[in-house]
Image 1: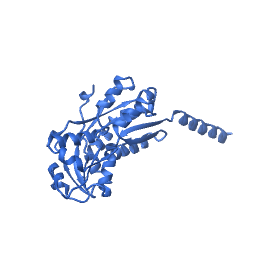
Image 2 (image 1 turned 180 degrees about the vertical axis):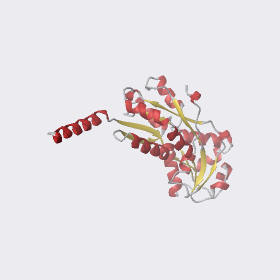
Image 3 (image 1 turned 135 degrees about the vertical axis):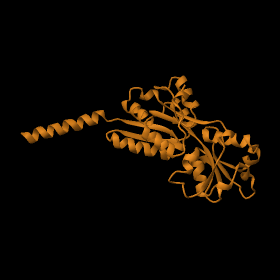
Length: 256
């Protein structure tokens, strides 16, 4: 009899866990691939019953997809203006919160990028330069701004190859399809690329700040897990990971 009662208690607890378990899907800018993977893994240790799936890509593409009904519960954009726009249109269930400020770098797997500047891209030995597509990728827009501010855009433009997002631009350089790329610092110092190339930090005075922000989407308005993860992102462990990947942490007052 005691065994049966114990078994019923265990079954009841398991059912309770299943009822309270949730799953969320996050749409995240490609520059977050390694930092957010670490954060999600740490979060999973604290909340093993819940499931957090992350899809990485272009902030601009996600911005469009959310308006078309894509099933994303949180949206982490490399350009804070995009979630702000969604919030104004009624697609957000939370305030827009800044989570990081990114940086761009020249990165190469075959050349010593640490001794280069943007002017080095004019070298006749460099025939292909990878950047993210400025049309929908914030890192691509900042790369274009830096090149224009340096008076190099028109001369470098014929050499450019465009990735759908910043991770694909980095992949082009890593695979040899481009000799140099203007990519995210967070990717250049990631486990995948660190030690496999070198980089030069592009002065942030040459482009607008890469202020990044997130929202809980309207779809996740009643999701306890979405809000729990948002709180976790603002906590010390997650912020330490972001700092380690080269992101600056904005003050809370930058939210609008």
